[in-house]
Image (tube, rainbow, N blue to C red; front, side, top):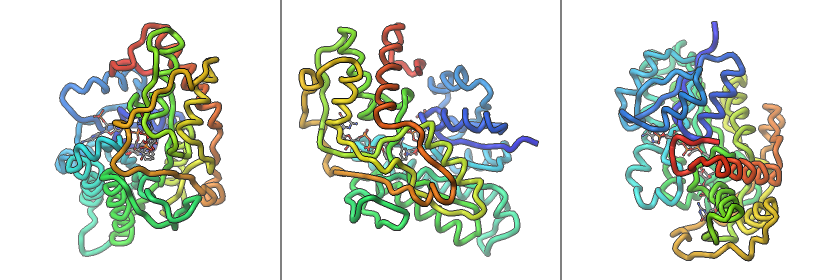
Length: 342
Ligand code: NDP
Ligand code: GDR
């Protein structure tokens, strides 16, 4: 019998790549989607026609219990979240509810459906394996570089705080109930399917628009922020590997290399044969109330224990994204429409 996976956040960047990867591995894949007429669901149905959709919302405990009862998954990947850091200041309570409390609701759904009582672990507690999408944003103002699984957290946004709650809760359900529940502490990962609000995609779309004469400038915030950027397709393999391990453990996933937003802009404009300094305009209103200045992963544990390695370099990633956006716009695609996914 095929193994069965349930993915929350199926309409997002990682949900799509993870679904493709699991289908290739022979899984039966189910995606949790919210809303009665979510336009992103039709995008999933078109691109990922083998994925089955179950309705549910991380804000609604009963819907998660129903989804787990219906799908009877072997593995649950909790990727659903409000994931855009600036939005977490504007809607801090909603971020706490979805990105933080949503983890509690998903873990409770699994606990209840596995028949694990609060009195302690049962044999059933190991049946459903759980992956939580933790984030390098939890490190925030870093105490050491690079960051590994033992580095302390100092989150700098309501998003980072909500992720830290979900992270510790996942660890707590593992310790309290013996559940196979793990967190991947993933550093920034990008692709042509990245949301247009995130800086890499904003840059690749901006470059494509300027190259095609559709825009004259690109407005960016803090050019000095440094991140460890990798390719989303590589990172979803790590999620799957974590749930195949003998023991439930948390892992840091990243490339171990850091670049600044300035270097990102330079690489993307250069990939299109343009000089970035002629087009990039800095805009103070795009700076954040509290910035994370730098993040850089130490992925040694994942390399040694899971055999995981990234395969796409920073320059290859930037070139891939610029090329995809040039094609999208040349073909008349509209990146602001939910239906369009390169
Ligand atoms: P996206 O923003 O692309 O996707 C977020 C997903 O969450 C969407 O499918 C969205 O669905 C869903 N969602 C939002 N609110 C709810 C809700 N109330 N109930 C159910 N689902 C909901 O994120 P990514 O794919 O980039 O990231 C996946 C996960 O990994 C997120 O948890 C993110 O925080 C985390 N992460 C991402 C990193 C990255 O660099 N990409 C790095 C580290 C962690 P809808 O279409 O309905 O809005
Ligand atoms: P991040 O990603 O906040 O790291 O969170 P984002 O791409 O939004 O920002 C990265 C860095 O770029 C700087 N920056 C800008 N950012 C945006 N979005 N737009 C701009 O115009 C701009 N100019 C400069 C930011 O200040 C920041 O320092 C992502 C999300 O996917 C999270 O969900 C995930 O947890 C983390 O990565 C790891």
